[in-house]
Image (cartoon, rainbow, N blue to C red):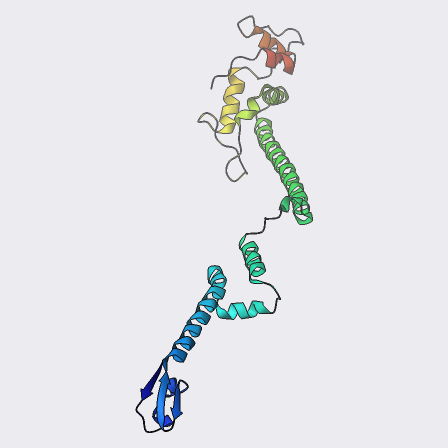
Amino acid sequence: MAIQVNVGGINDVPEIIRKFVTENNGVFSFDDEKAFQVLKNERESAKNARNELSPRKALGLTTEQVKAYQGLSKTPEELAELMAKAAVPAPKPNVKNSTEYLELKQELDAMKDFKQKWEAAEAENLKNKRNGLVRKLIGDFSDEYDKDLFSGFVESSGLMERFSLNDTKDGLNPVENQLPAEFLKTFADKYHFKKASVPGNAPDGNTPMNTGANAAFETAKKNGDVSGLINNAPEIKD
């Protein structure tokens, strides 16, 4: 239906509706049916555009991102599938099967083996150093002691294990609240590691044999029998 518009000329009609206004013998009429159809068509186009954009919105893509993917020659469905796959983290590779890992493990195993051997050698060196310090203390005894016999007993009986190096590894720690030399001398005196003799330089075999509780120990000591000393050694109290 046409609606008459009271204007002086076409230029007086607002530009937004000018295309819907016609002139007939100086009379201007507004075609509302034509305007309504245009408005309806525009709304339909907007609806179609929104429908086309919905997959993009579902993916969270911006207009710029959509333009960037247009050159891939992919359909929206294909793009959606690619995006979905990209969102799934790729499985982590098993590094234990890689050459780099196996080579590194080989190097670490070699270093571990070297470390164990070094520690064992270091422990043996410290043990030898401790033993050497104990032997020196026994060697410093006066000649009235049977130093060789006592040294063999200390090393074979396990008595050596009572000694330990100090923190600076240049000396021995005290043993049973005694200095190492004092402990050794007390032990040697207690178990008669002095050389046996009788007045007048009696020949071998004239030395009286001990018949007490430590007879076997004393006999082994007299005979220089380290195994006998160990087997018959008195109980060493802690």
